[in-house]
Length: 172
Image (cartoon, rainbow, N blue to C red):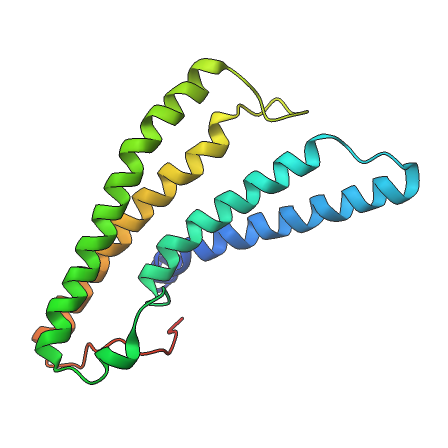
C-alpha cells in the first residue's frame, strides 16, 4: 500500500466506517418499510439495531470531528486572539477532550461490565448487547487518539509559524 492511500485512510477512517454504517442503517430502514408495507409486520430487531448503529456512527463522528477541527468551538472570540494565546487554548481544548474521555470511560467501564455479565443480546439478533455499548469505548479511544494527533499537528504548525487560530471553516 502506498503512503498516500494510508494517509487518506488515516485521515478519514471514521468517515469510511461511518459511511458503511449509514449505508447499513439505510438498508435496514428500507427493509423495515418494505416488510411493514408488504406483510404488515416489520421485524422486531430493526428498531434496536438501527438505534445501536446510530450510536456507533455518533461516537465515531466525535473522533472524526476532532481530527478535522469540525467540533463545536467558539471561533468568533478566538479569531481576535494572538497565535500564542490560541496555541495555549488549543492545548487546553485537547486536555479538555482527554479529560472528558477519561470521565466517560470511568463510568462506562461499570456499565460495560454489567452488559458483559448479563449475556443479553440485542432484541431479535444473536448480537451481544455489550457490542452496542462498546461504541462509547471506541469513541473515547478515538477522541484521545485524535486529540493527541491534533496536539502534534498544532505544535508542528506553531513551530513553523503558521496561523493556528481555529476558524468556522471545516477542512475535510
